Image (cartoon, rainbow, N blue to C red; front, side, top):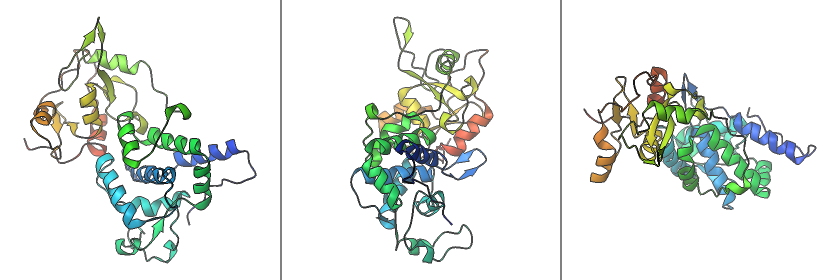
Length: 307
């Protein structure tokens, strides 16, 4: 039976809000080894966007299916909207009126797709009312989901995709703390240049336009160590986090076969397929194999381009 989040009226509002945020952090995501699926977080962000836009509490599954499948293609791995739509009920944050009457498959205990397309789902009524009445809490919940499950390079695009308005001036969250020495150590290890294209701009001796990327995302438990870092320009950092660029075992770059575009895209991204990383400098720790494997299995958009 689905568990229910207690937003009881006998506790101070701050306690209720804290309980909700803890429940959001505790959602059970699919895991297999180091692999994790962002299916439920994406459905939650989609639903929060609907609340903020004043949409009805319950959304018919066929409507959610189109939207969430699009989010999964762009921000996750290949999956299907029926998985989070059905399984989020077990976290107490989602309900499907009439769902108990649907026949379940023998394997993963979810309804047949044709049956799921006959029902609607949404936040439980009390939770919907709480989020509607407290826009700041809604933003805080959304930011918590973003921080827990997606790297910063995803945030703006993802927020736009689900129609959320997150005014940073009204949002205060406890983000996972990062080691402040991570970025300077990684940039130094790669000679203050992009490990993909070699871009190395500086202003009066100070490097600009370069970012320290986590290979195994920090929000998914990746450590702040040089072996888990890459010095990348902002373009190739985004391409790496979106899975358009990956890493092969021999320290060579791979480009996804799902990358499309014209001559400019080929010049800026496609041409680097098969090339060796620029760095790290002699004596610096190379990319760890377990971090590379995590990126390959969780982020990179297969298949790779043909050799």
